[in-house]
Image (tube, rainbow, N blue to C red):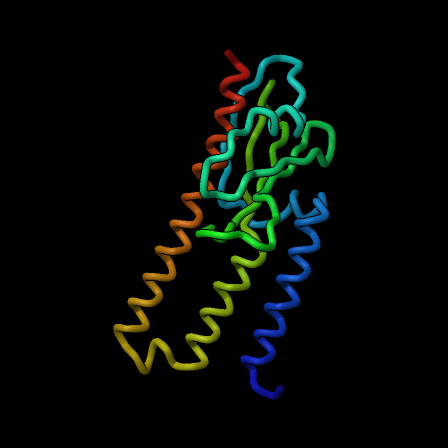
Length: 178
C-alpha cells in the first residue's frame, strides 16, 4: 500500500463513512457547518414556529428523486436531506448538499442554507489528484480538458437538481404567508 492512490482511496472511504454517520444520525454540528453553496431568505408570519413535522407534512415527493426528510435539531432550526436508502431501483442523483432551515436576523425572517456535502469535496479533490498524478491533463491534452469540463457540468447539474428542490422547500414558507 505504498502507492499514493491507495492512500487516497482509503482516505475517501474514511471520509464517506464519517459523513454517512454524521448525516444519518442528524448530527447538529454537521448540519450547521460547512461550505454554503445555496442560500435564500424568506419572511414568515409573526410568531411562526419552524417545525420539521409541519414542513414534512407539506412536502410533496417528486417522482424519481429521493424524498426529502426533515428533522428538528434545535428550536426554530430544521435540518433536511435526502432520505437514506441502501437499495434503490432506477436512476437516482448523487446529492451534493444538505440543508438547514433557521431563523435569521431579520424580523420574521428565515433562511434556507445548503452546505456542500463532504463527499462532494472529497470526490473533487480525488479527481484532481488522480488527474494530476496520472498526467491526465498533460498526456492527453484536449481529452483531459474535455473531461474536466464534463465533470464540472455533471457537478453543476447535480447542484441545480438540489437547488430546485430547496426552492420547493422555500415555497412552503411562501404558502404560509398567504
